[in-house]
Length: 302
Image (tube, rainbow, N blue to C red):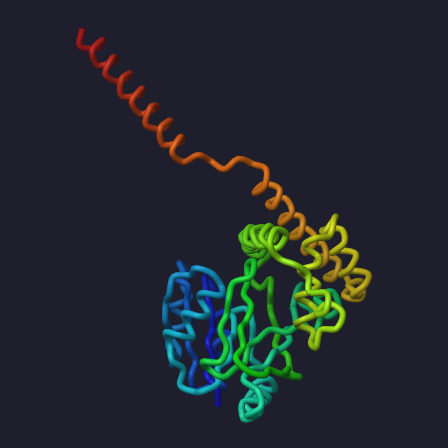
């Protein structure tokens, strides 16, 4: 058996189905980033633990969770609210957790969009570190998301999990990726100034994870990134085989890349607001308004 952490923020539409899919475990812990909707209320109806903690970043939230909320079992699985645990994946996780040779396992997602599995244009199988021995894996920030730091050997599971990436509607997806693009723009600037491409991992990486991450670092340095991403996803990866949903998905990803580029330009070339000068201007304007009010009062009295 293993414990399951569920990360949430304003997930009232997804949280019930997510928890119910995870009830195969006898230790479920919802870690909520201070939602303003009914997420906590709904989660509290189930015989599970619910903990709230203010969100700082994806990496920090995961590290705080692992350090501050002890699980019942030695092995843990990280699930997000728009994802689901499946009986097949749960059974494989139980079996894998008995193997003393590994401290963690990567699991591939199946992106669900417009009522179908987007198999080709999502780089399937794209793996995430999800199942691991507690105390052996930590997380650091990278762009809008996180990367794992593992203290031991890792492997890969065959079973996958569904990820309903647009389950709360397109407007929510756009709002979320607007926030993500700011973090990605900051990471892009950092990588261009201080990072480098790991060519060995790009061509000879031992796993899909190493190759994909090296490819991302390379993509940050390519011109016309939005157009190249669409061509890569739609034609090279085979997004054209995903039907109409594939066209929409590739277009959204190209738009996301363009948003990142615009924010990179904005961060590099637009002047940052001088908060001290702004405060002085506000103070002067307030004094002028107070003076005008005083003059008006004197005229009225006369």
